Length: 153
Image (cartoon, rainbow, N blue to C red; front, side, top):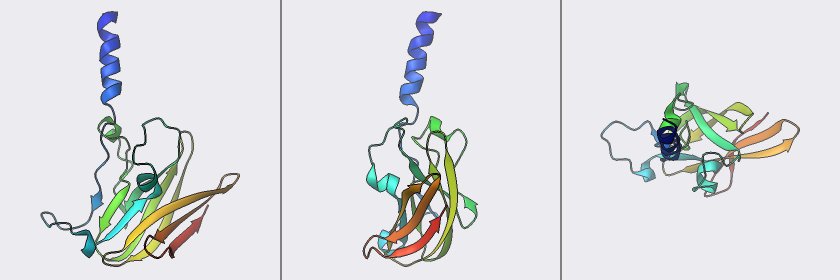
């Protein structure tokens, strides 16, 4: 039995978290998603570390909620994906409140940020460690570098 258990466990761990969680989108089902017509929200985790690993011990910035609709922190999703939350959202233009999670292996922090999305706009969520358990998280327009929304925790 021991001869079978070890290879099965190794196979299971190797397959766990092989794919990225798909992007969240509030576009109508069946509608072609032309990003020039939508606002794209990405996290710095997605943009800065495309080849991240399951246990790399680096902080992750995850999208948890969009306008109070839960889109992340989905139980058991890490059996299929590297992460349990989307790192990218394609949104219809308009006013949004997003909840982001700053996640380290043993600590996490949630913050809500508001912004007005415009067609063709790309926004990136960024974070900066400020001091002992203090963190600054903001949303930035990629094209202009303008801060769209800011929070301190």
